[in-house]
Length: 106
DNA sequence: AGATTGACTGCAT
DNA sequence: CATGCAGCCAATC
Image (cartoon, rainbow, N blue to C red; front, side):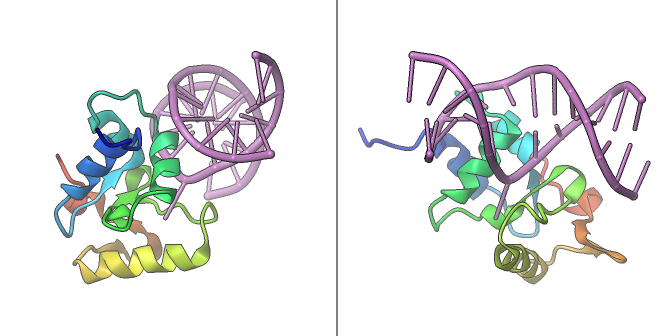
């Protein structure tokens, strides 16, 4: 057995998110089975997430990006990656995603 | 081993 | 819309 991170089930869930879709931290935490994760745990897990995890598809509640909580370079990268996948942002709210269209129902 | 922190969320003020 | 507080639990000091 590998000494997998306790977040392995979480990473597995994130990897199942299709392109153009996003989930909120709380949704991801609640969607993981076998762990008692909270939204904060998800965020912390993303920071240490392996390179094969599309962490950019995880956003804050309501489609907000975690501005000010992470390095600005990562924020720009996340927004860029999402745009490349066809995610639409709300005009005038350049950091808010149109969750009505892009929130992954799991 | 105890205290602090943290990619969060929701409600109250 | 800004600010504050409680809840959550692993990681870090």
